[in-house]
Image (cartoon, rainbow, N blue to C red; front, side, top):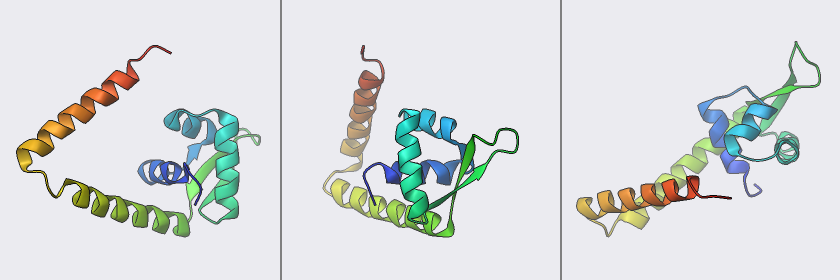
Length: 113
């Protein structure tokens, strides 16, 4: 897998059958970036592209069985890594850490470009 493909897989697990534009918006990338990623993933058998009936220039992107399997593997791996990373923290520290990460995410979301 190439960097960024995991986010495409996990986004499609949550909402399969997205248009390329919706997928680019969800991942906050430019359309040419998502086009290249989806093309590569299609050739790897992870996703399929279907033309929209209303506009043959547009596509919807769906997970294949291989793509869904790979997404499930990634979720499992990330859960194990999270458990390992947090194993030395007690419940109080985990909650504090989650709050701090939330604040960092909010700071980044609100930053001025």
